[in-house]
Length: 292
Image (cartoon, rainbow, N blue to C red; front, side, top):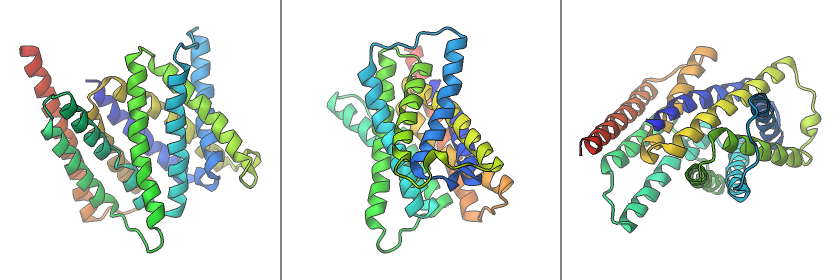
């Protein structure tokens, strides 16, 4: 079940966020995008060269669309995190599974296919768990920023569908991620010229370690996410995407000494229950298809 790669992706995204919180957050939005992308790009390029794989593609426009949407969304999300409470910014970004559910329902009705309402329900329950863990708030005057944050959820869904399209063209996961990190490096580099200091800021040892962790964990997360959304069940993958919040809460408690209130513990349990139920439902459905 390719969707289960999303669990590993969520763990890596949580570790990436921890590195950002540890030291990389001292940098500007575009500078952070540059380092996150460039470190991953160098790492995967070295692997491509070492294994003598073909980097050329016949679908450059498809890669450009995926990168333009995904990287633009990443920069927009980093910007909203600087304007909104962290919990609110994270919650708005994780509305993506809700929009994915709406997309799947719309396509199912258009093609007159049965709708997997049980998985739709699992996504809704998982999002309730997100609200219990993060407990987002929006202050007066921040409504327009919150709407931009909500747009990040829509753009994330669109980017994942672009990954799906590239997979249907038989583009390998590593090539999709390479072009994503390559274009991300260019985008971050150009944008950094408009930030004070840009990438020329000399980081501390902690900053270097944090940036390296952000880049490498971000790379591993993208590889797993691309595999999950490329070939897995869209709804199941979306439900499992919520597990990043549970991982983040545990990592924050272990490494940053942050307490987890009872309502958040209950929310983590709800997220786990939603993901487990969605996995079992999908597995049961696949067995029924194989039996037929």
